[in-house]
Length: 127
Image 1 (cartoon, helix red, strand yellow):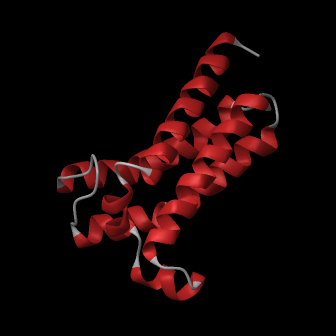
Image 2 (cartoon, rainbow, N blue to C red):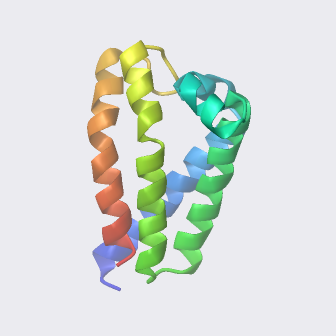
């Protein structure tokens, strides 16, 4: 694996693990704000369960990226996860509600444009 891809892969592992831990610990309560109301109706889960589930998913994806470094399918799974949480980012931007590390309208808007970068990063870093 090229050195830059290896660095990008480990940064992705770190990002996913940190996000997963924050969803399960210090940020758990604040992340409920990001969960759109419609998602509770669609999934049958409450907002806390969705936050916990996403945290567990992030930790599992971090583990997969760390232990299966050259599987493009792992990158596509991470990319799909990043795409799946995008409606929550849009919801947070539209409602203007603060969540951990996203306290301003500008930060919430920048977060929307960061999502495609994360998707491309996940696929590239695992390729």
